[in-house]
Length: 339
Image (cartoon, rainbow, N blue to C red; front, side):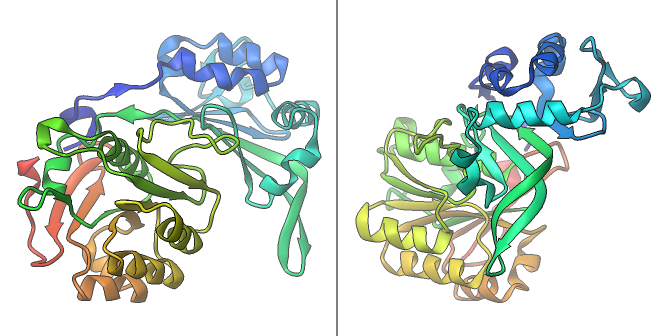
């Protein structure tokens, strides 16, 4: 299965509306170039990359292109508009609302979240304090990552993550290499579990989400900008291990969801959640279950059969292909044809 082929989904935003939160932070000349792009280009736009003294690059869903002064996409670097120091200075002014101090704390993490859940990754010279990054200066590159919520991608997967006999959600980990759609799938699973699925006999569940890098809910000033459901509470910018413990103690969730577990402290916190009787929904980097099992912390919860479903995602038929679903208790495949 893949998002494009087998899931019937509807993007929450079309290309034009997605740009409503992007255009205001672009320098005027570049804003005009982007606004002049054809709609089919805007619909595929995923990134806008600024590198001082080098061509402005548009990351599309299928390739990268440069852009000319008059807003035409081109594959020729010599025709491309090059980002100037003034462009970079103006971009930072607009992103920070002319207050660099206001974004200094976020710069420690290397990114800033915009309204709409879009993220701006930033690089430059790191200033250290006690061996830790205090802030960045001489900012030389920015990558605006455009966030598009896609609803419905988990609809055909969800029935295989529910225990119909007990009316409960299975402890689940989504496994995939980078750029295979696991965060998109995670977000839609959260949304549907939170809202409830009457046709599957599932009432809405209270979910707690630890969104360490603001990628799941895309919070802006603490408020989710992406649809994560009506019964979902989000801890934004919080380390996963601490966040899981906070949610467990204070929010009484039915399910705790996190992205990209892997460190020992993350897995230890996950075990605490499991032992407390709260359901777990998480993602992890890996090509397959065998690769995951080689990592000491994750290998432990696999061997102890604590997770009930492993969903392997890939790109064999496009981003978001469900390559396999594995029963964590028997370690047998359930087969992707079932979904």
